[in-house]
Image 1 (cartoon, helix red, strand yellow):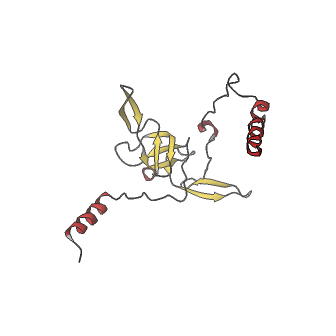
Image 2 (cartoon, one colour):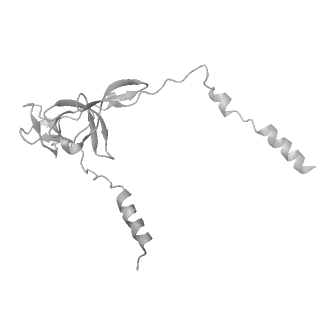
Image 3 (spheres, one colour):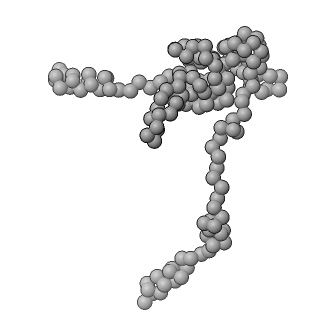
Length: 165
């Protein structure tokens, strides 16, 4: 028999347990794609995908679902994430939203195909979204020969002399 306290703990653990979001197997939307929102109050709005979060299945679309956010004591307009299922890619031929499929070309390259028109939707260049690496500061950088210089031999020789005596 379960005690009332154990029942309480079971009820609370179910209440506060986090549900994991469903993982999407084949992502067809990438950073830089033009998408149209097909749900929520932003239905029909078109924008460019700024950020993709595959863990929560959400996208940030430029100019869509903007909210006022307090940053550094000032209110700034910022885009909020939208669920992956609430957006669709735009067909490059018709300019309307379309479903997409993955297909292989004769050369064996994997491409996205628009279902409505059959047009190939190219994957945008991801190099513009990679973080910029900081340039090393030459004045504060240690030269390679100085970094590889063996500096522990004098201390090691002194320790060996102390062990022998």
